[in-house]
Amino acid sequence: MSDETCLQILQAALQGGVTLLDTAPWYCDSELRLGRCLQQLLPQFPRHSYEISTKIGRYQAATDSQALIGEREDGGRVVAKAEVWDFSEERVYSSCAQSLQRLQTTYIDVLQVHDLEFAEPLQILHVTLPALHRLKTQGVIRSIGITSYSLLALHHILEHSQVRIDSVLTYARLALHDRSLLEALHVHVQGQGQVVAVHVQIVVLQWSAVTAVCADSGCCAEWVQQWVQ
Image (cartoon, rainbow, N blue to C red):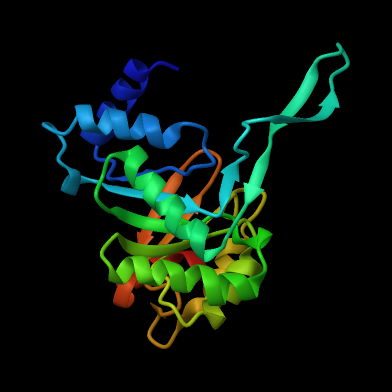
């Protein structure tokens, strides 16, 4: 896909009211393309008119190598991108700096731990999240997020983190074949129907749709209650 096509798609999305742009170092050259396109759109869409979320922890191998994972019946190769998992403090800082450069921005709205189920929980709790908290206090990032397909992993981190977690992202958990997110929400709904453990945002990714629900200080609690009842 050319940058021109990307620019047209991004412009149409912003004109249509999309205000959250999600990317990650793992998504090939997504950050670079997004940064270039947003710079071209600055006159029409200033930086404050949208939010950028990106991630740390999951990366493509530096060699950009590919691993053979199988062969098709016609003899074709099935390959997967070689990946690197690194949730260390040093990599959090360097990855954030690289994302800022690629995205051509001075701050990141939401910096998320990418697929935390592939890390040791103690490292996430005592190394990764505190490093993100320091970036937040410095004003480099504005919110801290965690992502995972595993609802159990998300719940464990939410229950034990001493760092305020502002957003939670999962996927394929509110679909026709899997409604487990609704059960998970019960765990975090207390008292007057306020969502207390997920402080700012619950982002539900399905294969065909993205739904964002603000859940700060009971905001949209009625909406959440309708879904979890």
